Length: 245
Length: 245
DNA sequence: GCGGTCCGATTGTCCGGACATACGGATTGA
DNA sequence: TCAATCCGTATGTCCGGACAATCGGACCGC
Image 1 (cartoon, helix red, strand yellow):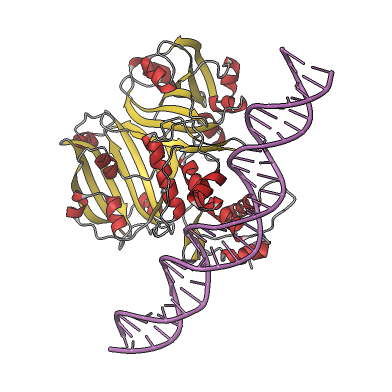
Image 2: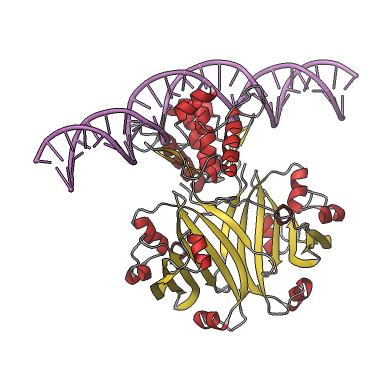
């Protein structure tokens, strides 16, 4: 019939993962067309020499990604819509780079300050204790696009201005072994103050898109808190949502 | 030790689900404190008279929700941060009602119009074919908060103005058996036009928060497309993100 | 004191089977 | 012709076990 699936038992990569990846690229390439049935799990397991739980685990991971839908008594089929990426904890830098925008970063401030009440609460540190403060301007095509002010708890990372201009904050964190886990995020809008307008090349009172985010690692420790403002003409948040079963 | 876990084998609700729910409320109530180990899976299974796969399935569902973290060789522990709800495909109506805001809805337009190119593309119907158009104003405490313009493909739902004012669009869809699956969403900002300002009780040029969303059911069919504008002083998008493993 | 090695603990992966449950079409009956 | 019932099919749930991979601490040697 259709698919050319196989698994390598010698590989250290889990069998269910090998299978799910092959299915994913088949869907991506259109080898598995939207709406088509995937064939029952039992037979698929037999064909690959795998057990049914393993096959189910592979399928389940794709269901969680929104690529497949299971129907009891019917089968598993490929979802029609072009689901691309569900919402991830993405970094602005990575997003822009993926879009081929060649982002440039200008570090405005890189210092240590006493934590305000708001920052202290977000980072779970004592008020007035030392925290890093980084202010950056993100530019694309030589034009300012976002102004970002971030706070980090002390001792987590030594923030080198040169590195900050070459890459993104999240990438620096990952590089020192911090595993990002979750983030709490608020998106809103407001009119630009004179200072903000000046920094972003807008007029005072112009609408700005605002984002506030606290990021946590896998132990639940707050590793970053930031308030960002974006020029709405040059940036908007776009993402895919999945309904929680 | 601490927890009072038990399962009812006579219940039609799956065992793993019973367990995961009990664990979730225990975490919510603080009976399981952040950072505490959950006890190993084998022993937990034995204590409950369950098999290890069942216990693992329960734990895994909470890991996916971001409440627990597994560490090989260490154990499973409760995440520190106050994870509330990860981002869901939520309806504005439900959000407000959950917040105790008593939302009111005023239907401005409820008619059938030919699809524009944009709407036709979003709903995957032919251009100029008939689609439902609904314009609504959402109010809290008697003040306008959001203006919503939605398009629906024909034959999906008979849109009763009275029902639309009593509840939300998503709830009506679910009531007729539509299973919401995913949505593609864009959040931005812009200055209010004179019309928009008038509708929302703002001044012309005031910043507005905008959201555009296309929603799909579990077969991948587009069931709704809408453009909403919010008063940023009264509403912002707040949500929790999880890093995809 | 310091570093490397060993080892227990715990989760990760995988198997093969069993029965329950729900969907959809075919069959049957009015 | 239409509606209710039956039944095959596929997924949903659950079991009990096996071995591998990894983490962290204890132990040991230098």
